[in-house]
Length: 106
Image 1 (spheres, rainbow, N blue to C red):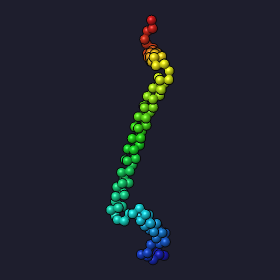
Image 2 (tube, one colour):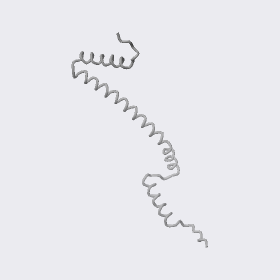
Image 3 (cartoon, rainbow, N blue to C red):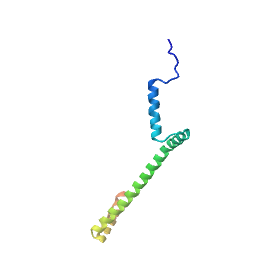
Image 4 (cartoon, one colour):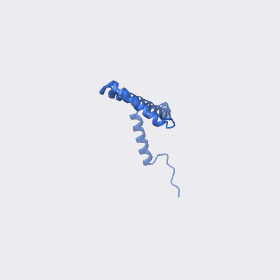
């Protein structure tokens, strides 16, 4: 009814062990300390990835600001500097007037 207990692993287990040994040798994992070191690194990786993503986001924001400054500079240089300043001032005034409808016009 019950299979006799064998101290030798079955064929599937043996195949898995051989594959595991090959991988360990390939990555030069030879001791239990090597395994513990890898496990510690594995635990830290999510924090490192999050930190790197945050840094990338910060750098993208800085790049956007610099790109906006370059674009504004190029627009200013393209045309007449004084005309562009006057146009920008008028746009700001129109925006302020449109944003505050409670101001009485005389």
